[in-house]
Amino acid sequence: MPEPRAPRESPQQRALSRRIGWRLIPFLCLCYLAAYLDRINVGFAKLQMAEQLGFSETAFGLGAGLFFVGYILFEVPSNLVLQRVGARLWIARIMISWGLLSTCTLFVQTPAQFYLVRFLLGAAEAGFLPGVLYYLTLWYPSWRRGRVIALFMLGLPLSSILGAPLSGWIMGNFDDLHGLQGWQWLFLLEGLPSVLLGLLAFALLPRDPDHARWLDAGERASLQATLAADLAQSPESGQRFSEGFFNLKVWMLGGIDFSILLSAYALGFWLPTFLRNAGVADPVRIGWLTALPSVAALLGMLLLGASSDRYRERRWHIILPFWIGAAAMAGSTFFAGNLAATVALFALAQAMIVGAVPVFFSLPATFLTGTAAATGFALACSLANIAGLVSNSLVGLALDLTGSSQGALWFFAGCLLLSSLLVMALPAKVVNR
Image 1 (spheres, rainbow, N blue to C red):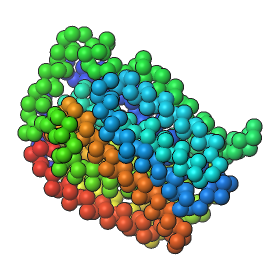
Image 2 (tube, rainbow, N blue to C red):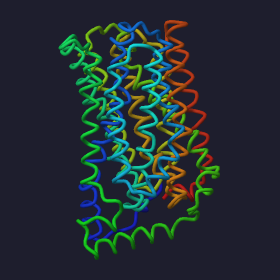
Image 3 (tube, rainbow, N blue to C red):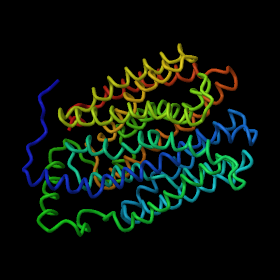
Image 4 (cartoon, one colour):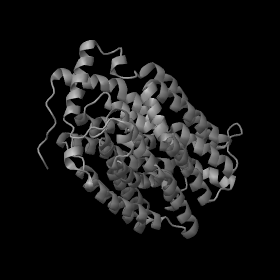
Protein backbone atom coordinates (compact mmCIF):
# COMPACT_ATOMS: atom_id res chain seq x y z
CA MET A 1 0.00 0.00 0.00
CA PRO A 2 1.46 3.42 -0.93
CA GLU A 3 2.18 6.04 1.68
CA PRO A 4 -0.64 8.46 2.47
CA ARG A 5 -0.71 11.30 -0.04
CA ALA A 6 -3.49 13.53 1.24
CA PRO A 7 -2.23 17.14 1.28
CA ARG A 8 -1.64 18.89 4.57
CA GLU A 9 -4.37 21.29 5.58
CA SER A 10 -4.22 24.20 7.98
CA PRO A 11 -6.29 24.10 11.18
CA GLN A 12 -8.52 26.76 9.61
CA GLN A 13 -9.16 24.61 6.53
CA ARG A 14 -9.98 21.57 8.65
CA ALA A 15 -12.31 23.64 10.81
CA LEU A 16 -14.04 25.03 7.72
CA SER A 17 -14.51 21.53 6.31
CA ARG A 18 -16.03 20.33 9.59
CA ARG A 19 -18.34 23.33 9.68
CA ILE A 20 -19.57 22.69 6.15
CA GLY A 21 -20.02 19.04 7.03
CA TRP A 22 -22.22 19.73 10.04
CA ARG A 23 -24.32 22.15 7.98
CA LEU A 24 -24.92 19.87 5.00
CA ILE A 25 -24.21 16.19 5.59
CA PRO A 26 -26.64 15.25 8.41
CA PHE A 27 -29.58 16.75 6.51
CA LEU A 28 -28.58 15.23 3.16
CA CYS A 29 -28.03 11.86 4.86
CA LEU A 30 -31.52 12.07 6.37
CA CYS A 31 -32.94 12.86 2.93
CA TYR A 32 -31.16 9.85 1.42
CA LEU A 33 -32.47 7.66 4.24
CA ALA A 34 -36.01 8.77 3.41
CA ALA A 35 -35.44 8.31 -0.32
CA TYR A 36 -34.07 4.81 -0.03
CA LEU A 37 -36.69 3.79 2.53
CA ASP A 38 -39.46 4.89 0.17
CA ARG A 39 -37.73 2.88 -2.56
CA ILE A 40 -37.23 -0.43 -0.69
CA ASN A 41 -40.18 -0.52 1.73
CA VAL A 42 -42.08 -2.22 -1.08
CA GLY A 43 -40.02 -5.31 -0.18
CA PHE A 44 -41.67 -5.35 3.25
CA ALA A 45 -45.08 -4.44 1.87
CA LYS A 46 -44.79 -7.51 -0.37
CA LEU A 47 -45.10 -9.80 2.68
CA GLN A 48 -48.79 -8.82 2.90
CA MET A 49 -49.52 -6.88 -0.27
CA ALA A 50 -48.74 -9.58 -2.86
CA GLU A 51 -50.96 -12.18 -1.21
CA GLN A 52 -53.84 -9.83 -0.43
CA LEU A 53 -53.90 -8.37 -3.94
CA GLY A 54 -53.16 -11.67 -5.72
CA PHE A 55 -49.85 -10.57 -7.30
CA SER A 56 -47.48 -13.30 -8.54
CA GLU A 57 -43.76 -13.14 -7.71
CA THR A 58 -43.04 -12.18 -11.34
CA ALA A 59 -45.67 -9.43 -11.38
CA PHE A 60 -44.43 -8.01 -8.12
CA GLY A 61 -40.80 -8.14 -9.25
CA LEU A 62 -41.72 -6.36 -12.50
CA GLY A 63 -43.65 -3.68 -10.65
CA ALA A 64 -40.83 -3.13 -8.18
CA GLY A 65 -38.41 -2.93 -11.10
CA LEU A 66 -40.45 -0.44 -13.16
CA PHE A 67 -39.36 2.18 -10.65
CA PHE A 68 -36.04 2.14 -12.46
CA VAL A 69 -37.51 2.72 -15.91
CA GLY A 70 -38.81 6.11 -14.82
CA TYR A 71 -35.61 6.72 -12.88
CA ILE A 72 -33.39 5.97 -15.88
CA LEU A 73 -35.37 8.06 -18.36
CA PHE A 74 -35.31 11.20 -16.22
CA GLU A 75 -31.90 10.91 -14.52
CA VAL A 76 -29.74 12.99 -16.87
CA PRO A 77 -32.38 15.70 -17.56
CA SER A 78 -33.04 16.03 -13.82
CA ASN A 79 -29.37 16.55 -12.99
CA LEU A 80 -28.96 19.15 -15.72
CA VAL A 81 -31.94 21.06 -14.33
CA LEU A 82 -30.44 20.85 -10.83
CA GLN A 83 -27.21 22.39 -12.07
CA ARG A 84 -29.19 25.24 -13.64
CA VAL A 85 -31.70 26.04 -10.87
CA GLY A 86 -29.68 24.93 -7.85
CA ALA A 87 -29.85 22.12 -5.32
CA ARG A 88 -32.11 23.95 -2.90
CA LEU A 89 -35.06 24.17 -5.28
CA TRP A 90 -34.59 20.94 -7.20
CA ILE A 91 -33.87 18.57 -4.29
CA ALA A 92 -36.92 20.01 -2.53
CA ARG A 93 -39.05 19.33 -5.62
CA ILE A 94 -37.74 15.79 -5.92
CA MET A 95 -38.46 14.95 -2.29
CA ILE A 96 -41.95 16.42 -2.17
CA SER A 97 -43.07 14.66 -5.36
CA TRP A 98 -41.59 11.28 -4.45
CA GLY A 99 -43.03 11.47 -0.91
CA LEU A 100 -46.51 12.10 -2.26
CA LEU A 101 -46.25 9.31 -4.85
CA SER A 102 -44.90 6.83 -2.32
CA THR A 103 -47.85 7.62 -0.07
CA CYS A 104 -50.25 7.09 -2.98
CA THR A 105 -49.07 3.48 -3.28
CA LEU A 106 -51.52 2.64 -0.48
CA PHE A 107 -54.37 3.02 -3.00
CA VAL A 108 -53.00 0.33 -5.38
CA GLN A 109 -55.38 -2.56 -6.08
CA THR A 110 -54.30 -3.99 -9.46
CA PRO A 111 -50.95 -4.86 -11.10
CA ALA A 112 -51.45 -2.06 -13.66
CA GLN A 113 -51.89 0.51 -10.88
CA PHE A 114 -48.81 -0.85 -9.13
CA TYR A 115 -46.77 -0.59 -12.33
CA LEU A 116 -47.89 3.00 -12.91
CA VAL A 117 -47.19 4.32 -9.43
CA ARG A 118 -43.76 2.65 -9.33
CA PHE A 119 -42.84 4.16 -12.71
CA LEU A 120 -43.94 7.62 -11.56
CA LEU A 121 -42.06 7.23 -8.27
CA GLY A 122 -38.87 6.51 -10.21
CA ALA A 123 -39.42 9.54 -12.45
CA ALA A 124 -40.00 11.73 -9.39
CA GLU A 125 -36.90 10.57 -7.55
CA ALA A 126 -34.62 10.68 -10.60
CA GLY A 127 -31.66 12.95 -10.08
CA PHE A 128 -31.54 12.92 -6.28
CA LEU A 129 -28.43 10.77 -5.75
CA PRO A 130 -26.34 12.06 -8.69
CA GLY A 131 -27.57 15.57 -7.89
CA VAL A 132 -26.29 15.40 -4.32
CA LEU A 133 -23.01 13.83 -5.48
CA TYR A 134 -22.52 16.69 -7.93
CA TYR A 135 -23.54 19.19 -5.23
CA LEU A 136 -20.84 17.87 -2.88
CA THR A 137 -18.14 18.57 -5.50
CA LEU A 138 -18.96 22.27 -5.05
CA TRP A 139 -17.92 22.04 -1.38
CA TYR A 140 -15.15 19.44 -1.06
CA PRO A 141 -11.81 18.72 -2.80
CA SER A 142 -11.15 15.24 -4.16
CA TRP A 143 -9.12 14.04 -1.17
CA ARG A 144 -12.10 14.49 1.16
CA ARG A 145 -14.86 13.09 -1.03
CA GLY A 146 -14.50 9.42 -0.11
CA ARG A 147 -15.25 10.12 3.56
CA VAL A 148 -17.85 12.79 2.83
CA ILE A 149 -19.74 10.61 0.34
CA ALA A 150 -19.57 7.74 2.85
CA LEU A 151 -21.13 9.93 5.55
CA PHE A 152 -23.87 11.10 3.19
CA MET A 153 -24.55 7.59 1.94
CA LEU A 154 -24.94 6.23 5.46
CA GLY A 155 -28.58 6.97 4.72
CA LEU A 156 -28.60 3.79 2.62
CA PRO A 157 -27.77 1.27 5.39
CA LEU A 158 -29.57 3.41 7.99
CA SER A 159 -32.74 3.09 5.92
CA SER A 160 -32.63 -0.62 6.70
CA ILE A 161 -31.17 -0.40 10.21
CA LEU A 162 -33.94 1.98 11.27
CA GLY A 163 -36.48 1.40 8.55
CA ALA A 164 -36.57 -2.39 8.58
CA PRO A 165 -37.63 -2.73 12.24
CA LEU A 166 -39.97 0.26 11.78
CA SER A 167 -41.55 -1.33 8.70
CA GLY A 168 -41.99 -4.63 10.48
CA TRP A 169 -43.49 -2.88 13.51
CA ILE A 170 -45.94 -0.87 11.38
CA MET A 171 -47.12 -3.94 9.50
CA GLY A 172 -47.38 -5.99 12.66
CA ASN A 173 -49.23 -3.41 14.77
CA PHE A 174 -51.28 -1.28 12.37
CA ASP A 175 -52.83 -4.07 10.32
CA ASP A 176 -56.59 -3.51 9.82
CA LEU A 177 -56.53 -0.27 11.83
CA HIS A 178 -59.23 2.18 10.64
CA GLY A 179 -59.90 -0.02 7.63
CA LEU A 180 -56.33 0.03 6.25
CA GLN A 181 -54.08 -2.99 5.95
CA GLY A 182 -50.58 -3.00 7.44
CA TRP A 183 -48.91 -2.49 4.06
CA GLN A 184 -51.11 0.54 3.40
CA TRP A 185 -50.11 2.11 6.72
CA LEU A 186 -46.51 1.41 5.76
CA PHE A 187 -46.68 3.58 2.64
CA LEU A 188 -48.61 6.30 4.45
CA LEU A 189 -46.37 6.63 7.51
CA GLU A 190 -43.09 6.32 5.60
CA GLY A 191 -44.02 8.53 2.64
CA LEU A 192 -45.17 11.71 4.37
CA PRO A 193 -41.83 12.45 6.14
CA SER A 194 -40.20 12.86 2.72
CA VAL A 195 -42.65 15.65 1.94
CA LEU A 196 -41.69 17.42 5.18
CA LEU A 197 -37.98 17.05 4.41
CA GLY A 198 -38.58 18.53 0.98
CA LEU A 199 -40.11 21.62 2.56
CA LEU A 200 -37.15 21.90 4.96
CA ALA A 201 -34.71 21.78 2.02
CA PHE A 202 -35.86 25.27 1.02
CA ALA A 203 -34.63 26.64 4.34
CA LEU A 204 -31.49 24.56 4.91
CA LEU A 205 -29.70 24.08 1.57
CA PRO A 206 -27.79 26.96 -0.04
CA ARG A 207 -27.42 26.81 -3.80
CA ASP A 208 -23.60 26.84 -3.58
CA PRO A 209 -20.86 28.31 -1.32
CA ASP A 210 -21.46 31.81 -2.73
CA HIS A 211 -25.05 31.66 -1.45
CA ALA A 212 -24.23 30.25 2.00
CA ARG A 213 -25.00 33.04 4.46
CA TRP A 214 -23.21 31.14 7.23
CA LEU A 215 -19.86 31.52 5.42
CA ASP A 216 -18.01 34.84 5.50
CA ALA A 217 -16.06 36.26 2.56
CA GLY A 218 -12.74 34.90 3.81
CA GLU A 219 -14.12 31.38 4.22
CA ARG A 220 -15.61 31.44 0.72
CA ALA A 221 -12.29 32.60 -0.73
CA SER A 222 -10.38 29.88 1.14
CA LEU A 223 -12.77 27.19 -0.07
CA GLN A 224 -12.63 28.35 -3.69
CA ALA A 225 -8.81 28.42 -3.57
CA THR A 226 -8.72 24.85 -2.25
CA LEU A 227 -11.11 23.63 -4.95
CA ALA A 228 -9.20 25.46 -7.69
CA ALA A 229 -5.88 23.98 -6.55
CA ASP A 230 -7.41 20.50 -6.50
CA LEU A 231 -8.83 20.95 -10.00
CA ALA A 232 -5.44 22.11 -11.31
CA GLN A 233 -3.92 18.76 -10.23
CA SER A 234 -6.33 16.76 -12.40
CA PRO A 235 -4.66 15.31 -15.52
CA GLU A 236 -8.09 15.29 -17.20
CA SER A 237 -10.88 17.72 -16.48
CA GLY A 238 -13.78 17.76 -18.93
CA GLN A 239 -16.42 20.42 -18.38
CA ARG A 240 -18.85 20.31 -21.33
CA PHE A 241 -21.96 18.12 -21.69
CA SER A 242 -20.36 16.10 -24.49
CA GLU A 243 -17.30 15.39 -22.32
CA GLY A 244 -19.58 13.83 -19.73
CA PHE A 245 -21.98 11.98 -22.03
CA PHE A 246 -19.55 10.62 -24.64
CA ASN A 247 -16.79 9.74 -22.19
CA LEU A 248 -15.76 6.06 -22.24
CA LYS A 249 -14.76 6.15 -18.57
CA VAL A 250 -18.28 7.33 -17.61
CA TRP A 251 -19.81 4.39 -19.49
CA MET A 252 -17.34 2.08 -17.75
CA LEU A 253 -18.44 3.52 -14.41
CA GLY A 254 -22.04 2.83 -15.39
CA GLY A 255 -21.15 -0.83 -15.99
CA ILE A 256 -19.38 -1.08 -12.64
CA ASP A 257 -22.29 0.50 -10.77
CA PHE A 258 -24.67 -1.80 -12.67
CA SER A 259 -23.00 -4.77 -10.97
CA ILE A 260 -23.13 -3.07 -7.57
CA LEU A 261 -26.83 -2.38 -7.86
CA LEU A 262 -27.68 -5.85 -9.16
CA SER A 263 -26.50 -7.21 -5.82
CA ALA A 264 -27.56 -4.32 -3.59
CA TYR A 265 -31.15 -4.29 -4.86
CA ALA A 266 -31.45 -8.06 -4.70
CA LEU A 267 -30.55 -7.89 -1.02
CA GLY A 268 -32.54 -4.72 -0.33
CA PHE A 269 -35.80 -5.83 -1.98
CA TRP A 270 -35.71 -9.57 -1.43
CA LEU A 271 -33.95 -10.11 1.89
CA PRO A 272 -37.27 -10.14 3.81
CA THR A 273 -38.47 -12.88 1.45
CA PHE A 274 -35.22 -14.83 1.83
CA LEU A 275 -35.54 -14.66 5.62
CA ARG A 276 -39.13 -15.85 5.48
CA ASN A 277 -38.03 -18.76 3.28
CA ALA A 278 -35.38 -19.55 5.93
CA GLY A 279 -38.18 -20.08 8.45
CA VAL A 280 -38.96 -16.66 9.97
CA ALA A 281 -42.69 -15.85 9.91
CA ASP A 282 -43.03 -12.84 12.26
CA PRO A 283 -42.69 -9.56 10.27
CA VAL A 284 -41.29 -7.77 13.33
CA ARG A 285 -38.50 -10.35 13.66
CA ILE A 286 -37.86 -10.18 9.92
CA GLY A 287 -37.46 -6.42 10.32
CA TRP A 288 -34.80 -6.77 13.02
CA LEU A 289 -32.90 -9.47 11.15
CA THR A 290 -32.94 -7.42 7.94
CA ALA A 291 -31.25 -4.59 9.83
CA LEU A 292 -28.17 -6.68 10.73
CA PRO A 293 -26.58 -6.79 7.23
CA SER A 294 -27.19 -3.04 7.01
CA VAL A 295 -25.15 -2.47 10.18
CA ALA A 296 -22.32 -4.32 8.45
CA ALA A 297 -22.80 -2.15 5.35
CA LEU A 298 -22.60 1.02 7.46
CA LEU A 299 -19.29 -0.07 8.97
CA GLY A 300 -17.97 -1.08 5.56
CA MET A 301 -18.79 2.32 4.07
CA LEU A 302 -17.07 4.23 6.86
CA LEU A 303 -13.93 2.07 6.88
CA LEU A 304 -13.47 1.78 3.11
CA GLY A 305 -14.25 5.46 2.51
CA ALA A 306 -11.77 6.64 5.14
CA SER A 307 -9.05 4.22 4.00
CA SER A 308 -9.48 5.20 0.35
CA ASP A 309 -9.12 8.90 1.18
CA ARG A 310 -6.15 8.33 3.47
CA TYR A 311 -4.15 6.47 0.85
CA ARG A 312 -5.56 8.36 -2.17
CA GLU A 313 -6.25 4.95 -3.71
CA ARG A 314 -9.58 4.07 -5.31
CA ARG A 315 -9.28 1.00 -7.55
CA TRP A 316 -8.26 -1.74 -5.08
CA HIS A 317 -10.66 -0.32 -2.51
CA ILE A 318 -13.36 -1.40 -4.99
CA ILE A 319 -11.86 -4.55 -6.50
CA LEU A 320 -11.10 -6.46 -3.30
CA PRO A 321 -14.54 -5.77 -1.75
CA PHE A 322 -16.14 -6.94 -5.02
CA TRP A 323 -14.28 -10.26 -4.84
CA ILE A 324 -15.20 -10.86 -1.20
CA GLY A 325 -18.82 -9.76 -1.69
CA ALA A 326 -19.24 -12.02 -4.73
CA ALA A 327 -17.91 -15.01 -2.79
CA ALA A 328 -20.25 -14.33 0.13
CA MET A 329 -23.31 -13.93 -2.07
CA ALA A 330 -22.59 -17.08 -4.07
CA GLY A 331 -21.80 -18.96 -0.87
CA SER A 332 -25.18 -18.02 0.62
CA THR A 333 -26.91 -20.27 -1.92
CA PHE A 334 -25.53 -23.34 -0.11
CA PHE A 335 -27.24 -22.28 3.15
CA ALA A 336 -30.69 -21.18 1.94
CA GLY A 337 -32.47 -22.91 4.84
CA ASN A 338 -29.97 -21.88 7.51
CA LEU A 339 -31.03 -18.61 9.13
CA ALA A 340 -27.74 -17.80 10.89
CA ALA A 341 -25.62 -18.53 7.81
CA THR A 342 -27.98 -16.55 5.56
CA VAL A 343 -27.80 -13.47 7.76
CA ALA A 344 -24.01 -13.74 8.27
CA LEU A 345 -23.17 -14.18 4.58
CA PHE A 346 -25.54 -11.41 3.48
CA ALA A 347 -23.98 -9.18 6.14
CA LEU A 348 -20.51 -9.83 4.70
CA ALA A 349 -21.79 -9.24 1.17
CA GLN A 350 -23.45 -5.97 2.20
CA ALA A 351 -20.34 -4.77 4.05
CA MET A 352 -18.18 -5.28 0.98
CA ILE A 353 -20.50 -4.37 -1.91
CA VAL A 354 -22.33 -1.43 -0.34
CA GLY A 355 -19.17 -0.45 1.53
CA ALA A 356 -17.39 0.17 -1.79
CA VAL A 357 -20.14 2.52 -3.05
CA PRO A 358 -18.72 5.79 -1.58
CA VAL A 359 -15.30 4.99 -3.05
CA PHE A 360 -16.91 4.32 -6.42
CA PHE A 361 -18.84 7.60 -6.38
CA SER A 362 -15.68 9.59 -5.72
CA LEU A 363 -14.43 8.58 -9.20
CA PRO A 364 -16.43 10.73 -11.70
CA ALA A 365 -15.30 14.04 -10.19
CA THR A 366 -11.66 13.03 -10.59
CA PHE A 367 -11.92 13.69 -14.33
CA LEU A 368 -15.11 15.78 -14.76
CA THR A 369 -16.28 19.20 -13.58
CA GLY A 370 -19.22 21.54 -14.20
CA THR A 371 -21.85 20.40 -16.70
CA ALA A 372 -19.74 17.37 -17.59
CA ALA A 373 -19.74 16.26 -13.94
CA ALA A 374 -23.50 16.71 -13.61
CA THR A 375 -23.98 14.74 -16.82
CA GLY A 376 -21.44 12.07 -15.93
CA PHE A 377 -22.86 11.40 -12.47
CA ALA A 378 -26.38 11.13 -13.88
CA LEU A 379 -25.42 9.00 -16.89
CA ALA A 380 -23.47 6.52 -14.76
CA CYS A 381 -26.43 6.26 -12.37
CA SER A 382 -28.88 5.87 -15.28
CA LEU A 383 -26.93 3.02 -16.83
CA ALA A 384 -26.51 1.38 -13.45
CA ASN A 385 -30.15 1.59 -12.49
CA ILE A 386 -31.10 -0.70 -15.35
CA ALA A 387 -29.92 -3.21 -12.74
CA GLY A 388 -32.94 -2.40 -10.60
CA LEU A 389 -35.30 -3.68 -13.27
CA VAL A 390 -33.11 -6.68 -14.10
CA SER A 391 -32.42 -7.62 -10.49
CA ASN A 392 -35.97 -7.54 -9.22
CA SER A 393 -37.45 -9.18 -12.30
CA LEU A 394 -34.79 -11.91 -12.37
CA VAL A 395 -35.18 -12.85 -8.71
CA GLY A 396 -38.98 -12.86 -9.00
CA LEU A 397 -38.83 -15.01 -12.13
CA ALA A 398 -36.34 -17.42 -10.52
CA LEU A 399 -38.57 -17.83 -7.47
CA ASP A 400 -41.64 -18.46 -9.64
CA LEU A 401 -39.91 -20.97 -11.94
CA THR A 402 -37.63 -22.84 -9.55
CA GLY A 403 -38.69 -21.85 -6.04
CA SER A 404 -35.10 -20.73 -5.41
CA SER A 405 -33.04 -17.57 -5.97
CA GLN A 406 -29.79 -19.56 -6.37
CA GLY A 407 -29.32 -18.96 -10.11
CA ALA A 408 -29.94 -15.22 -9.81
CA LEU A 409 -27.47 -14.81 -6.93
CA TRP A 410 -24.75 -16.70 -8.84
CA PHE A 411 -25.36 -14.45 -11.84
CA PHE A 412 -25.03 -11.32 -9.67
CA ALA A 413 -21.78 -12.63 -8.16
CA GLY A 414 -20.38 -13.26 -11.64
CA CYS A 415 -21.24 -9.72 -12.70
CA LEU A 416 -19.25 -8.36 -9.74
CA LEU A 417 -16.21 -10.35 -10.79
CA LEU A 418 -16.49 -9.13 -14.39
CA SER A 419 -16.92 -5.51 -13.32
CA SER A 420 -13.73 -5.74 -11.23
CA LEU A 421 -11.94 -5.99 -14.59
CA LEU A 422 -13.48 -2.67 -15.60
CA VAL A 423 -12.18 -1.13 -12.37
CA MET A 424 -8.68 -2.42 -13.19
CA ALA A 425 -8.93 -0.78 -16.63
CA LEU A 426 -9.46 2.69 -15.13
CA PRO A 427 -6.15 4.64 -15.25
CA ALA A 428 -4.69 4.87 -11.74
CA LYS A 429 -3.07 8.27 -12.38
CA VAL A 430 -6.53 9.72 -13.09
CA VAL A 431 -8.79 8.13 -10.46
CA ASN A 432 -6.36 7.77 -7.51
CA ARG A 433 -6.89 11.32 -6.27
